[in-house]
Image (tube, rainbow, N blue to C red; front, top):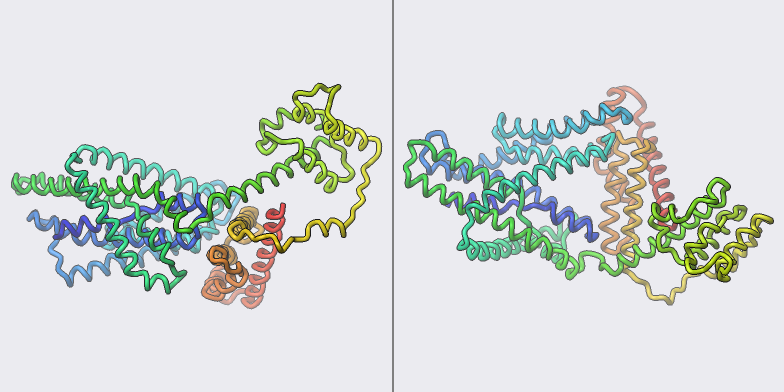
Length: 559
């Protein structure tokens, strides 16, 4: 029984990394990512706690003094709460400490402090694990989990160099995952037999069915609390529960402990052989389930996502991307014409530029015409020299036998040199041409995709303000604004108004202003400064950042 429960705790741990990458590529709603990542984090922590309890009972059966423990029901519940809640409290304490360290390392231009920030994240993570697991006898995994969640919530905007920290952790994660899977694969390949695959196939189906049953058992609750959940998301969560690093590492740990302890002379040869066979089979099945879920569930999750309607169809996204690429090409051509209108650039070979500027590759005559008209409107007093552009538009024509279209471009250039172009605008006629035809059917999927793109532009603008210090990173304004985008993204996915300003105020009213009050007291002292003035100043800065971000995003969105 204890070995079966240990095996169940190993299989309960899920790995959301591969699914998270897929969700980002396909543009799945943010709340689905939250459901999968959050469920995986809690699964991993709970799996380690249950593994600790039942593996101790299993080890006790060996009869080796000091190895394992006879844990009863009362002792088991007490141990569970100590491991889980003790680890959470220790993780929160270390998370607050790390946020304080990041807050005080506030010289953004100091390379040394940026490096210290990165090293602080990994140092505090290992310290939290050591203190919780070794010194306090609690769960180190849950401690690191809560430390990370606290730092993510309140310390992300305090990073002086976000790219440096992100790249460091990506490299660390990649190296550790690669090492773990290489070790696990080497062991798994040596202990798996052909007869195991029949049992693996049956176990794989059973694991999927059990997960479906568990997810939908709690569906009446998860569909009504928090950010809610629909049946399509529940079904995808059931299917997308891939097994990975935590399960493989726990299986390796169990195998190593059994092999080490059964070398004791007090263990009989029969017991030693039996227990080693047990853990070998357990590791073979654990590694096989991880292999099958990554091989089968991973690639087919994209098909399930599209069939359940959880992502925007690829046709819609491709059309939106195609329109943006066309718009970018025209704008790039306009800026190219602006450069060749200057004396220092008029003889630059277009072929060299085309090799290094991808939007200028494979341009057509019609696109050049459209760009020329846009150039006239944007730079009415400038004259581009098309002499180096024409041979690439008409490669089969000689310079003396240019077509009428090429002659038009050249005459535009020559005529402009002798007399400036005067542009007569007709606003009423132009407005009339751009009036929207309400009889045209609305492509709702395209509108949804464009709204999500606009939210991404807002996020990029907020991050730009943080990078150039237009927005103070050491406060709760960035937190409220970035959290409001998560709410807006969820609303946009459901066809509701964005209302990101209202969401930012709701986040501020919940606990952000209380935290900002404590932060202000920490900065200037308990009795220092005018707190009312600070509150008004914070609200004004928040509104200014919001307005600036929307103006810049609208400009970028409209081109």
